[in-house]
Length: 241
Length: 241
DNA sequence: CGTCCAATAATGTGATCACAAATTCAAAAT
DNA sequence: ATTTTGAATTTGTGATCACATTATTGGACG
Image (cartoon, rainbow over all chains, first blue to last red; front, side, top):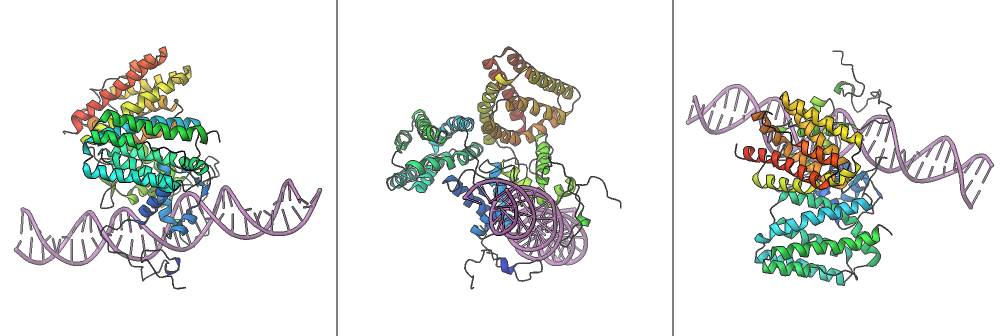
């Protein structure tokens, strides 16, 4: 077995306590740690609904899939547990937590409170270039919806919102909001998986219009209604089904 | 050197890859993992201002202090970084992050938004026994203030607020709020350390009164004003000094 | 054909090892 | 006396090992 390829890829064979010949470290100055890569990978997968809630996830399993040792996975998973994206069950197994009625309601409160605020703060910083990027993202969402690409839709929707929110230059509030998204995203996927994207309505038009006019009040309202529409869609179905 | 003592305490000497004779595991059914103990310990220390912002913290140093190997410390620290209680600097060092003007303002927004809501939700669940506990905590705060016990004051203040908030039965919002507290607590300590507790005013009277009356509006207002008073105290000083 | 139960495999946790990068510190040079 | 430099130490990261605990499997018994 040849097993060459990317230099930084993990290969169990060549390691050991007495190992003299180390694998090449890429001298890239912007090199990022393995657990950071694992974290980003898991995070993206959670946000696009790649894990079934309740289904146990194993450290060694992920490690093998991602081509790293179990160690960086442990750190990434620990981080995601802290962000409540993952849950440590009583039998020490890790999984995406299930949704409950009270939790759903609290998420809704947090979103309604935080996200319009972020949008309002972002508004003054949205220049023409940023607006173009956001519009392009919305086009991508429409395409994903039309072709029934659930994963693409979810990624686009996330990027649409957070491209705006990031411009608010409010790191601390942004962090809270990211944690909230990690907690409901897996459930969006469940619902969409059942009904497809045909029933989705692009609610972003009003938000874009408000941005173009520089109208903060309308923008906040548009974001709030986008949240309410999407979450009601989940809330009606997922909790009962 | 005798080095006996608690069975679960870590002793570097007796370990090794080939070790046959393992140290006794306590058969306690409620046994908690080492990284959980480390996490709670570090968390409490952060909340009472036990770390100087910006000052680097070393994994091995904490490990030695707490009598564990570096491994559980890594997991606990990773978790605290995710909660933004600690920060990973670009040189890979970890420390309590510094306060900035924008961050302070965002924390204030989050607190004003989340904590009155938690208090309102808690109110219906505060029975006589719970009220007595909360009053006892307030007495403890007064004693700590009178004796200039900064650490005791901070712990009491945290317990006062979170004993109420926990009764809201709103885990998700509680988690967001805990992250927020971890981010400003170290700074409270800095200010109090400079001026002592003499200037502190116990703002909890109004909150207790509102609880006794079952008046949600007054309770929310009292919490909001408690936050504003405490944070203004920090904001005026810490950012300029 | 379903139900226990023992044996086996897999998993999370804690510990140690190895190494590169960062920090520290002391001696040499200016 | 201050700066520079280079060696030695410290630190974070990734990997592997060991073990208790939890799942899973496979066959014996009803």
